[in-house]
Length: 386
Ligand SMILES: Cc1cc2nc3c(=O)[nH]c(=O)nc-3n(C[C@H](O)[C@H](O)[C@H](O)COP(=O)(O)OP(=O)(O)OC[C@H]3O[C@@H](n4cnc5c(N)ncnc54)[C@H](O)[C@@H]3O)c2cc1C
Image (cartoon, rainbow, N blue to C red):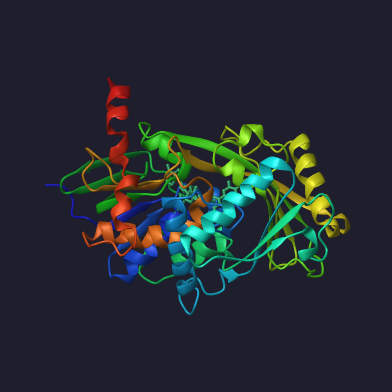
């Protein structure tokens, strides 16, 4: 007889996805433990921009899920767990040259088709935003989006009573059978009825058959200063192009300038085909800073105080991996959120918690969630194992 389970649900990974799943399950009265190799928001969730953005999502399922998650994030921030973590603000997307102009056309038509919570309130010349520098041919102003630093959201979710947190505790091995799941933490074993694996890029270590690809991104932080006229993020249309996967031919750096509530600016971010977080290079920072200061000249009065890199967990087909793991009873996967995990975490946390409990999905896009199942890689994984 296996040992009785200490927990109803074990959650591997204290990033924003694991934390959101934990909050939803604890709210439903389940005994939940979150295990992390290092600590809360130790990986991508603590090394990202925090745009809760529909504009940057690929058209189709990702944009629809992002719209739904934006609305739900707003709801959770109104007296719920995300109060003080999420704040609403406008978004500005700018462009120059043919490639960026056509990305802006695509953005405007995507948002018109969605009829979601994000709307275009102005579309015209750079003069729409006082303070904007030269080299901008067109500016699209959006209302409805917001910003949420990943580390704040993780701490907010995990502060809910009823969630046991265990770290630093790298999971070394996972064994599952029809009765439950056992985690090997080296110094001890932990038993639960179900496991949710929310491991980001570390999915590769424990589930190597899944096609996760690391995508590093470099970011720059300035010192604090007086809050200026920039009330929301300023995103180059080439950033939208980079997110569709065609970033190799970008004509201009995919810069995003984000004014933080601290009075600092966060300036990002590249998309590089490796997983190194110790590679912040001069040439990349120079090109991001150069375009950023042309676009928002007030930056020239600031000092750079920190640079860092984070790594996104991309998936070969551009969709996250969410659902029951074939051949591993009682293991649910929630990974592969690439550059969208902060935005999608509210809805994904709710839907994964419902899956764990065997309850019907609440998402408007329930029928489409099957497209995210890890079962779509079953043949590839079997071929790889053969
Ligand atoms: C530069 C950059 C900019 C971004 N900007 C945005 C943005 O503006 N908007 C947006 O929505 N998203 C953005 N993202 C993406 C977003 O940060 C991620 O999609 C999201 O944080 C993923 O969360 P997660 O919980 O899936 O993974 P992670 O946050 O990576 O969490 C995984 C956790 O697993 C733990 N772990 C690893 N190995 C083990 C082990 N063996 N045992 C136990 N625990 C382990 C890690 O310590 C970590 O805490 C950005 C990402 C980057 C890198």
